[in-house]
Image 1 (tube, helix red, strand yellow):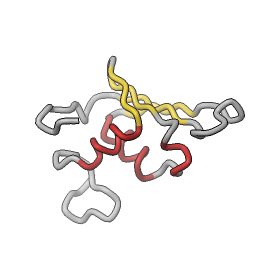
Image 2 (image 1 turned 135 degrees about the vertical axis):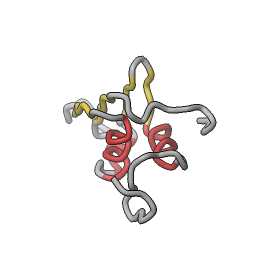
Image 3 (image 1 turned 135 degrees about the horizontal axis):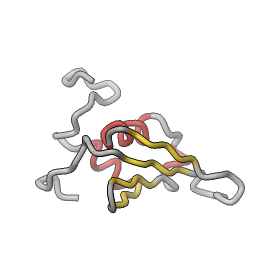
Length: 90
């Protein structure tokens, strides 16, 4: 994902997650966020690693797999404080 492209971190986002293995046994979790930045931070910092593979974020008509979500989280223009980050305030 190219960082030069502006991403709408303030857009509403929906996050779907499930256990990456045996998803039939566990239901898919759904959560709506007022901003995609909040959804990104939640996915990276709060979801257990076993769920990363089964996580998808939708922003408008675009879908982002977990690797894309992680890349957005690591961008210099990510607007929220990251876990352990002292340079930004939430």
